[in-house]
Structures are given as C-alpha cells and as structure tokens.
Amino acid sequence: MKLAALYDIHGNLPAFEAALAAASKEADLLLIGGDVTWGPMPDGVTARLRSLPLPALFIRGNGDREVVEAYDRQHGRATTGETIDDITEWAAGRITEADRDLLASR
Image 1: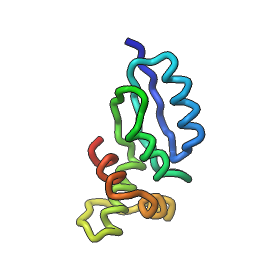
Image 2: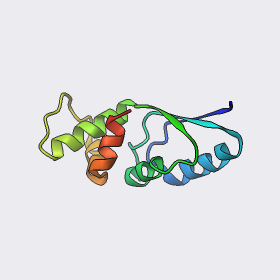
Image 3: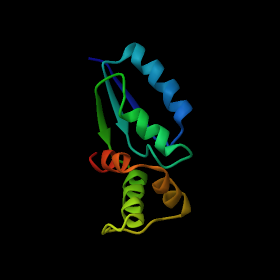
Image 4: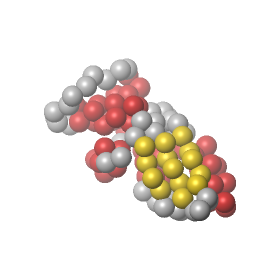
C-alpha cells in the first residue's frame, strides 16, 4: 500500500488540488496532516476534503482546533480556548456547520 501525506494545506485550495492530483496517481491512501483551514480558502478546502478521491486518515492541527473553537464561539456554543487572532475568526466565519463538524471529528 502506498501512502501520500499532505500536511499544512492552510486553506490553499489550488495547491491542495495540485497535490491531490499528483497523489491520486500513485497512492492508495491519503494522510491529511493538520492545519487544513487556517488560510485564504477554508470553505473550499473543507468541501474538497469531503470528496477525496482516495480513502484518508486525518490528523487535526492546532489551527483547525482553533477554527472549530472560534466557530463555536460565533454560534453561541461553549468553548474551552481563546482565538489567537483575526485570521482564525475570519476562517471560522467562512466555514459551514458541516465543515466545523468535519474538523472537530478528526
């Protein structure tokens, strides 16, 4: 079995798409390693995560954890942490509840 490990996507959908295209040619399994949303296109990246071409394992990064906490705070849910900065709040405002649940489940 061949594994492709994609880390630190940081909301960069075009780069993620390019990496997925290359990985899909060789790999049987994807490892998505953290910090997928903290960047310019968090909603596009999370949508793409739900339609991956291969089976995948996920590792939640600190940026994803912070975006989930910021989303929860914005939607009146109890949280345990503090948002680091405006980018986290912005990213949390761009994702859907389904995105939030995807990130929280990893």
